[in-house]
Image (cartoon, rainbow over all chains, first blue to last red; front, side, top):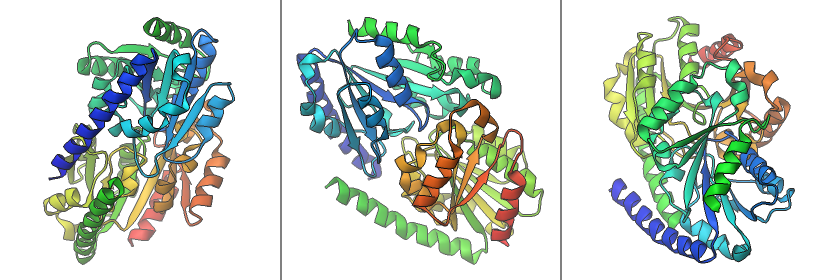
Length: 214
Length: 214
């Protein structure tokens, strides 16, 4: 019975996600859904991406959090249109939440809409929101056992961004194992190594993103 | 309607959790539910706790993961009875999952049952499993904004273990802010600073835990 319940919720979600996707495509805006565990650096990546693209793309941002507006304030400080969704108890964004904020954006003026999901390695991978691409971040400090423990997130993502690469010398994380296990789950996964703190690797990432949006 | 659905699930869960708790109390076993984001170091803390207690308490462990048996193998290697629960898609353990594995433990021979929840800062805080105490880990590498973003987890926990304290010099995390915000959410929260990698702070933690079980 529990499985049936979840299936129904996911079917309803998929219908709304398809409607969102249609609206995004008609406005010719590329939509990226960023997912990770709490504290892997999603907001920092968005900040670095906005700065790295330096006006080459017109960007909007949707911030998803259980509570608080810290992340939206960080993005707003960069002069980017941003909407904060507070999910209350819900551990992921769903298509309906996105549907409700679409009208707050000047969609036709945007090239790229970045959606920052709630920090969670599980449920965000199950709920489509109408995105063109899912991207996941993994902090090196989380260790190398994550791909085989949270396989769906790695399977659903088009790109894996290994963040906090500057901490690598101070941890026991085996980056080779992360890559090998990730690619065994998803052979098409594009992998980037970055540090949002030092800026290492950000240029390669933003160039690739720009090529997708174009 | 979505809210009603969630309420029904939680009410059913609470009933089963109360049944579990009764069984645990009759067997005179203390039950600790450990929660954190993915990669904060739950399994490492359990390993260090078992080694630190050095046979002073008879311990059993339940490992919760979406997939995989890595964690259970690590605990089994220490000669401790362990059961792995694979939740499939579910992002948390619930009382029914625990109920189904209770019979696998020699409960009356145990002093302490440690339950390692699925790595997730959201839903595990909502689902009681019959525990005497919830404990949460926060890795310093996750940053200092977590208490205000994931308040329920901090409110529901009796202790907050700040792990990976050895990484503090290499991050921008403000440990004072973490403590201040955590205590503003839960004034009774007992806070420990540890490194499961170097062993720092483990002794203080195990002594406190031992005093609770006794």
